Image 1 (tube, rainbow, N blue to C red):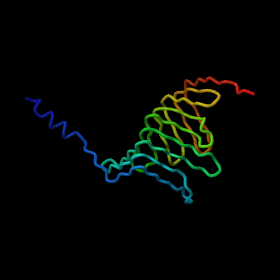
Image 2 (image 1 turned 60 degrees about the vertical axis):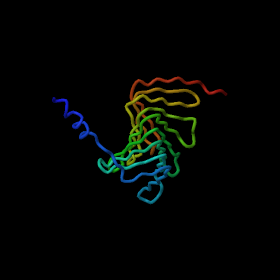
Image 3 (image 1 turned 45 degrees about the horizontal axis):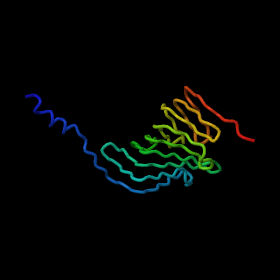
Image 4 (image 1 turned 90 degrees about the vertical axis):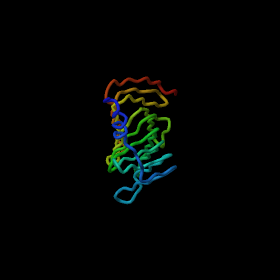
Length: 164
């Protein structure tokens, strides 16, 4: 007879998520303290859930803007942020490109963006593709401000000498 209450308990534990706002095919521009565009976030769908103050984004595109420097563009299948939106977790088919060098790509399945410091990091497998070869690594830390990339471990690469 103890099994009779299990479905009721399961229903109580299910969280019914209801959004307080949602957008489709949106573009948001985030300004820095001087009123200059710092980031542009686009996506197919976005919904905010007040119960846990989370935001879900379908097909997000994040562009990090820095005057006088190349813009970094990051895309993925899904984005999730919590609370103050200082970090965004991107999952599924994450691709990082440089706006002025689209042949340069970093690929991973999971990436955390720190929007306060303009950094990106992951402990997952990463592949960097360039016209001259590929580099594989486990883990990455990228700083979009000074355009540096640190690869964490198991780094290996294959490069072809440029043709003259």
